[in-house]
Length: 349
Image (cartoon, one colour):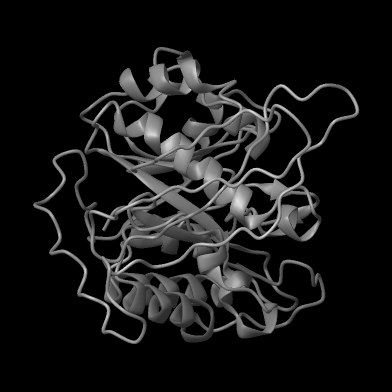
């Protein structure tokens, strides 16, 4: 990530014009403009008018062709593409148990899982913590949360800078800021631009450590890819120079306890695969789940899981982790033998 800043101090109530010239250094780069106010006194606010970005063509006249972007620079030594040989795993979700017990539970169900999904409601734990040490020999898909305003204020800079700097270098780490942001954006908790700006801020801290084994991973709901959602996944994407991997969370019969069918793998995973083929970046499933539908003894869900695994492998997904828990009363757990054995076969492939 490259950032430029123009700062100014208002001495009175007059309008002040501020200009910032920025030249991109990478082909296909995204530009994101943000304005912040600091040190306002009680009752004061900052009014902003007529914010715009204009493309400059180096003195050319209007109507002249825009010059081609500069050739991409040599490969960034601080990034590396994750494997496209699909790894299957499960979530660490220690409700009513310790993290160690949760890991033992998924290992007992599926054999030793090579990739684990790890959720955190605040900052991620230190790498020498018991929980991080527990997962040291696995790939992890780890997410953490903090409001964009807190991130952009710099409140967490010291902690996150150290977290990236002390991360192990022999472990594939897919790290994600604020997974599934769509509902929070819809509810007005923050805007897409604030979310993207926070991503860029965090990625700037990550870049200082130059850890090619750490992959910035945007995690979205699968619903966002459905045209019926009215959403565009790129609204949440901070740019290719920030986000290296995109993952999704598809569920079957999430809100319908009377469901009698499983959405086909082609219909559920196909649009995600097609979107990511066009996008070009690595991708995966950070969560996958389904209750057993009415009338099924587990054989139907097992066949569904097998089909999904096949589609993921055919489309070079990097990882897929099953949400092995009961959440808000919905039993996603693969406790029936057919479903458990099918996922175990994918994990151990």
